[in-house]
Amino acid sequence: MEHYDAVIVGAGFAGIYQLYLLRAQGLKCLVIDQAGDVGAMSDTESYVYRYSWDKELLKTYEWKEHYVKQPQVLAYLEHVVERHDLRKDMRFNTQLVGANWDDDSQTWKLDVSSGKGKIECRYLVTGLGLLSKQNYPEIDGLDSFQGQLHHTAKWPKDLDLTGLRVGVVGCGSTGVQVITNIAGKVSHLTCFQRHPQYSVPSGDKVVTDEYRKWVNENYDTIWDGVWNSITAFGFKESERAFSDASPEEREKVFQENWDKGNGFRFMFGTFNDLTFNPEANEAACEFIRKKIGQIVKDPEKAKKLKPTDVYARRPLCDGQARGGTYYEQFNRDNVDIVDLKETPIERVEAKGVRTSDGKLHELDVLVFATGFDAVEGNYTRINIHGRDGVSLADAWEGPGPTSYLGFTMPGFPNFFAITGPKGPFTNIPPAVETQVRFINNLIGAAESSSDDKPKAIEATPEAEKDWSKLCEELAANSLFWKAEDNWIFGANIAGKRRCLRFFFGGMQGYRQKLEECEKNGFAGFKPFSDGNSSAR
Ligand code: NA7
Image 1 (tube, protein in one colour):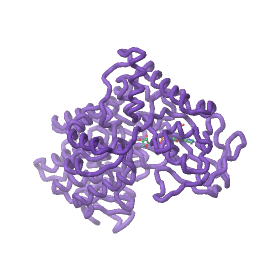
Image 2 (cartoon, protein in one colour):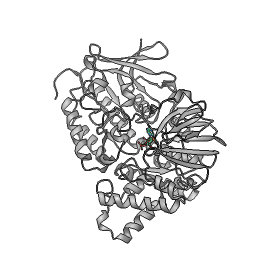
Image 3 (cartoon, helix red, strand yellow):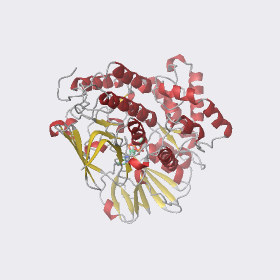
Image 4 (tube, protein in one colour):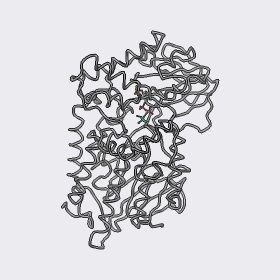
């Protein structure tokens, strides 16, 4: 049995920073990751899709485009790992199979897939990511397909689709970007779309020296803006209500934000009530529908692409490859769209996909851009058993996936699930940083508490209930509830419970809650030295 003070699972944004901080506290730490090296997914404007805490690196690390792509995120994280000499405490190709809390020794006993197989630690921190368990829809005949099958979450490094007949199932955040990127390369592209979504150009372009200079000179202000915003995306969110603008002003605001690009900017930078005022929301929908009508020349394709739903899912933006934006791709003769509401997929056959109208869409490659079993998917597949052998899956059976503060659960002492359920719905790296710092402070406080008994940090059931209640209140008026099949509520997976999985109070609101908790002596947690005893 190996012994550590803390084991951190996942060598992404969360795990790397948690290791950096806990090691600086003097704890003996180990990071394990099932992948062969550090990893992450890209998603936001480059200057805030990174750590804020290494100020020198912020100014010196190069990025070439406004949006970092996956290989660049990987290279950045690898660089951070080398720069801070973190690799020596990391073990790759090692999966956490099970974790059991042992009340007598107040430690976690871990089963891992490689090495000696057993590890004991006092603190268990997971940084598994919000979105990493892939969703593969069940479609008849999938095994019979003779071409290549891929999921966008596991994109092979050297995949070359040039000249091939490709089908993409799913037109969400990832599907839209993949379609935009490959349409000009493949011989034929069939997009299998269930719900059309509202996509805005990303505004991606090459970073000029002048722009980079501006970013470097204003980094403190930029981060200040991030920490005090709703979305933490690094742009100024609108403080103006839709009703305060004239029809001409509204059009101008939508157009300006469309031109600047970025889905979150379009949703939160135009007016401050787009996500809960149906009139404002419909105006944004109408603006985008009008754009689709203007851009897409074939009226049949345009009709299929125009959403009728509310604009209330995670806002999309398309990659805007050199060959044009998402909607522009549909002006290519080699790009078709299949509306799965009209003609659902009946089965996959050796040569392609058969839809209900009897048509066989012949394909060399079938790509699933069908998203993730988000939030709890990562946890329910690992056997995590807390106090009295209760599994995390069992604990979430009644209330649905929940937590106190977005990362800690009663009955699971010394266990912290970064980006766990009911955490902030924001740009991920700043959310991760906020949680990692708090967890570090919490562990630090427990470690320095006066007695020398083993420490157990555990949220009270009341604190968890109150947090859930707060999350429900914050989301009560949100139009996000109204969008069909939204993964944010677990509605994208058959049989998954439909319930709230996020804190909608924004980055600033979230940070305030954590600060209050800390200021009040880590309110909502049981006394550190004896997790069994009653609440403070
Ligand atoms: P999303 O946003 O969940 O999108 C998944 C897409 O796949 C969406 O268009 C779904 O259609 C579609 N889908 C899912 N299941 C099926 C089936 N069975 N048949 C047809 N189409 C299906 O996942 P992404 O990977 O694009 O993005 C997830 C997050 O990653 C994103 O929000 C960013 O934060 C990064 P639907 O619209 O539900 O009808």
